[in-house]
Length: 143
Image (cartoon, rainbow, N blue to C red):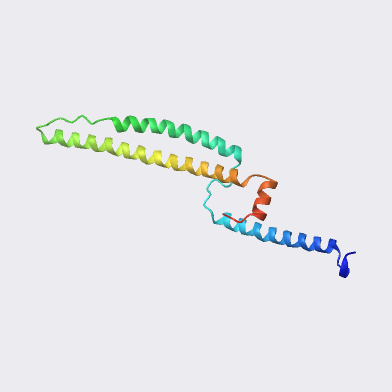
């Protein structure tokens, strides 16, 4: 026994209790912060994220090629004398323009989905897995 009747075991137990209490409090803070984060792919497993990413990349690549081809197309317009022909040309240009915009919007949505999947993967990589994630949540401040 040490001086004054205090045992080193009591101090060690007190330190352990403080560490466990701090870890539980900080872990709860992490969970609350994570619940507020927008993570649409949170429920997917790592394998599912990889498969989804590959699928979206394939779709985005094909859509990008279609968009590029459509954007490069020029509407063949020529001078016309009849009003009906002019209206038909105008309608054709409008259809081509609408199709280009629609493809661009679809491509933007695909790219947004790709970015969200990559962000989820990056978040998981920084957090770690298993015991590493538990310790990080327990002892590091939430970001």
